[in-house]
Length: 103
Image (cartoon, rainbow, N blue to C red):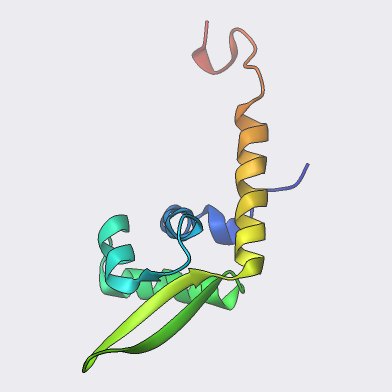
């Protein structure tokens, strides 16, 4: 049994990883609005994912305006796939009658 990665498991980080798994790259503001967090929360959570090697943060400009883009690294994609597979394994277990109030 492989444990759920605690870096990914935090709700906001899981949402970020899930969003980025569906794209090559996403602009910071798009991720912030999709995950419904503040700039500071997204910055902190993206930095944690970057420190783990799961997310790459790229800064640049569009015209004269600074922009930041987030993307999953190859390691991040692999870890996210493993995380999802572990979740599927966990939720795929049959629930025995009478446990946790289930008749």
